[in-house]
Image 1: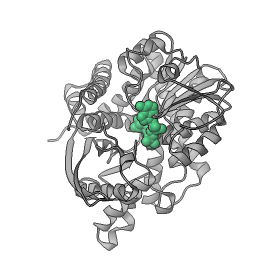
Image 2: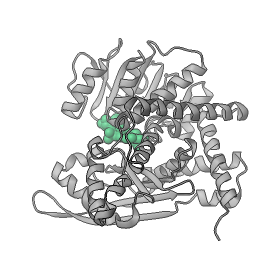
Image 3: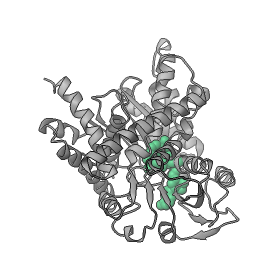
Length: 423
Ligand code: NAD
């Protein structure tokens, strides 16, 4: 399978974001055309051996959308819905995310079309190593730098790095560790990278509340997704004394009107890989979860979770898009018209790529920054981008999403004007 109806819709959403910003800034036609198409598209079919000795052929992708600002950068997703159009959409968003955060990176995305929960640890290692081998010279520390995404983690990046390094000559190996970011700290990963996306989402929310002159204390929050992003977002919101009243994952949703014990839920989820079975709370349906009367809703799982089908039931006053594309453009416009602030994904979940950049710089300079240093730089980066998006929003009188894309598109256009388009 190389495309599905849902991934085709997702890619249409991403190109609509680009079109919308391009129109708003009257972008040069030639730049617009370049930004509407990924630069390179790679599909690899590779065999792996299952534990029972059978061989299966899997399909993997890497879409390199744009590298005018620097090396391609973006996650590797292992999910059964992963395909060419999903990769194209996510890679396009990465270009704009890196531009918005002023990072010297371009945009890419890729992954393998599998449900990782159906593979053993040993099988997953073989998948990662064989996929990395198939990608060959199409990734590299100054060319295209993968990171974790849905269904992948620090261990995945460790295997990817090791496979890549083993294809290099001995003299090149140490210097090539930055071919991936989001590695285990012991392998050259950065302190703070694992929690960075969730913490970045919390910083974006803090910035918004600061602008509104409101306190987050005892504001209620519901979080969809309790993997890397959702669990660390929950932890960061609890640190801000917010009441995380509901959490949902693939298995269902849990609810406590006075606030869940986030530390206990994290402990439970790390042992069982799910929130199912957590006690001292009620269980609610997915429909009830989205219709909760909460101050803040944080979708941190999948794309297209809030659409025109269920947007009418949303009662949250603020939405923080910690996942990529969780609210469709149409639903987002309806929410903004109804006075709901929707902090867009390219700002709300940019913390991950920001700290990935810090990891890359630390590897490049053989240095190690402290956790405190990284967290305060992350906060400043998110707040700086939030300030710039807020200023554009004020001038244009538009949504947060459009303002974020305009800010990113303005930089991309400027760079193309200065460089010109070859030849
Ligand atoms: P993950 O695999 O660690 O966790 C995914 C979570 O979503 C799990 O709790 C899973 O149970 C839940 N989930 C899956 N299907 C669901 C469903 N149908 N209903 C409810 N919950 C469901 O993934 P992650 O790394 O936390 O990524 C989540 C999102 O954040 C993705 O959109 C990803 O692209 C985005 N993102 C991740 C990073 C990162 O650093 N990991 C950075 C930027 C953006």
